[in-house]
Image (cartoon, rainbow, N blue to C red; front, side, top):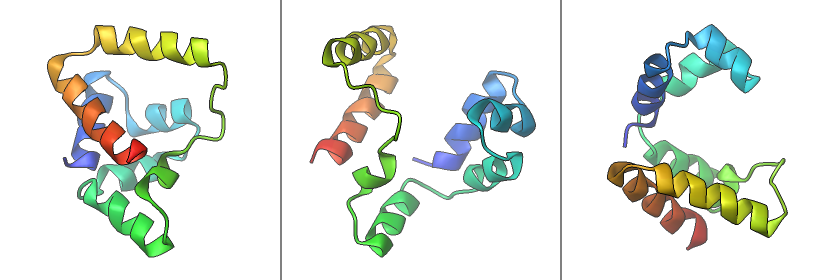
Length: 99
């Protein structure tokens, strides 16, 4: 999957400029542009390999929710609303994160 291309498509579908998206995400708009130029998710694995860590380590978020029931509810809601294509992507991501 071309990570940068997908990110750009999602951003523009929501009508956001790089500046607006960067502000909403709490990052500089130039960083948004850099990420949008990433060639593929393979880059994620290369970065992880260079650090000697599994790819899932790069996906860990500091502000993770800890209440299991709340997490299950949020995940369930998102999965219920997801398209088949989105569910396929979630499954691929879970394969990376959990194994």
